[in-house]
Image (cartoon, rainbow, N blue to C red; front, side, top):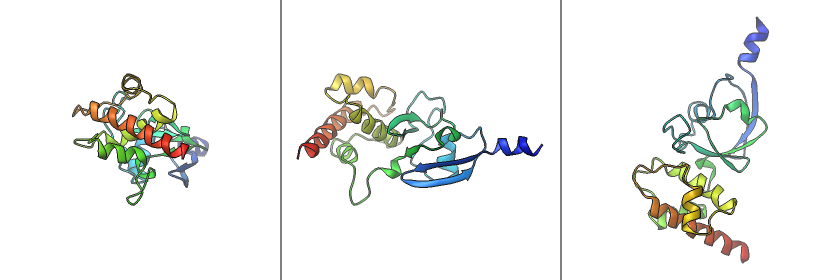
Length: 167
């Protein structure tokens, strides 16, 4: 019986926003619920809870993933980045700056997932033109329909980041 209970709450060790986490977690706990409920990282939003809206997008080892479809235990040994791990109040990430400059947010609910998806989109090399950005950002829904501003922000941030690398 003790073995069954032990397997129901396996040990989990991984990085969240550069901070090591070591804890026990129920095997069925989603990364989204773990981040919000256990770590109080509430920037990652719960939207559809079915992987259809992208509101819960986080980066796992630099790749965008829906936290609602990822079990926390699947992140063992991995590096998870949430919106709280991107930029600071005094030094915003270029994507955050571009979202502000282009008014790429309205209600703001989808914005954390949009920003993380945009960071990955740029890193993946999919920020060359509006059509490509729209295609690669299509997994993130904005119910306020700020899509033109989001596309402009992604393209601007990609240019800023490329200029920074060239300098």
